[in-house]
Length: 388
Image (cartoon, rainbow, N blue to C red; front, side):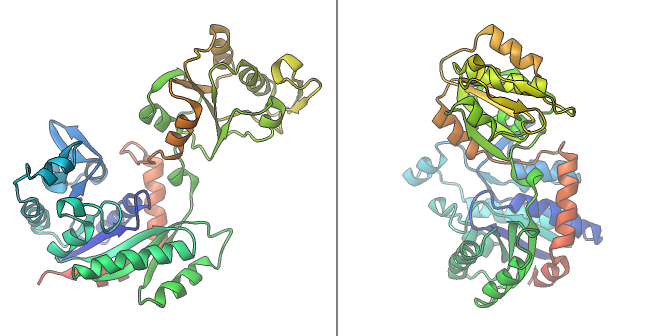
């Protein structure tokens, strides 16, 4: 039985994406493959059982028979870390992880172990990724994300902590690389990592569907009221704009994948966007945006140049007037109202966790295809450590 520990240089680097694709590739090779995420920070309840969201996702996507209690043996609820430091947690959590791993591994050809965050995450409770990989006798593969200096620096830094716990880092994967814009980058990364004796096992290309939040994620993760769902909640957001300028200037910055965050009392901006959306379209008819709407008399907006906006988030304590909400609905624009101020909302949207859900079939299929084409799966199998 082989095992590999999939680590990362930080949160949201692409571990789950890699896990989903790698599992498909391993199962496709006829290998009976198990999955476990020993320590989870984001968890949900399924039939009363707390489990990490990634374990829930993998179990649902691949129909794995293992119980969630062994696929996600340790999770960190609010207050757990303080309780552990005070000495209130007396259970041997390491033993729970080892026991769960043995259960998942029973009769399997391969087990994929997914870590949490960078190599040191979990050290405060004695369960850093490096410690857990060591206790499971697993070699590690580190996932980072696009760039040149930063991913190499981070991979080398994380390897040092794994080495301290006797864990060999056998390779690295770099995610979110714009290969079309920088076709030479994979070879540069490979050469840079080779200087440190770390093989590059694959480069995952940047895809907006995988990297950018969708409007439905806003509904899930922002605390607010949806005023109108719009035509497509699965639309990815690739640009965030703040409504802090005249409408004529703002419209030049918007597109169908833009999210505009603005105070709830900026009726002038909302009306300008509604006008452009209603008057735009395939015909590309020019619309005269009145001075009352834009604040800039005489501005002409071409419908084909300004295809509207992906969605609106209205912030603050200012509840939009009924006529404004009616206008948004008539233009079929996604809009939600959030009580927090614009800066705080913009920060929350920027930090949104882009998670995959079992029902995201197109996204999962894309992940599986990209990983199959981009990773050296056979090499990863060779590097996976067999049982002693």
